[in-house]
Length: 101
Image 1: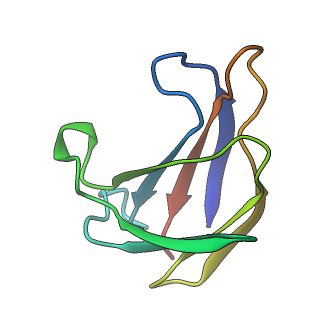
Image 2 (image 1 turned 120 degrees about the vertical axis):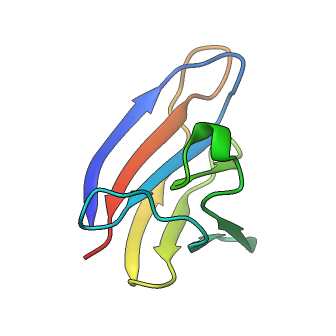
């Protein structure tokens, strides 16, 4: 379930899709597979690989002007139409806060 979606501009981390996934009790969900797809490809990544940013954290670098769809493998959440926002001379990022049922 999508709890919150926001965009941000960070020149040091352009076009970054950040995902924070929590369990229904509020605890971070580590080791959860996330699948991201776009017209020309698919990539899988996992929460918890950057523990300094949180056990439920994962990120993916997007390409400017590409639309993505995101699927959380273990609960079927699907978000479509995700694309890097325009921050002038560089693409911005998206922060997704998700909760498992």
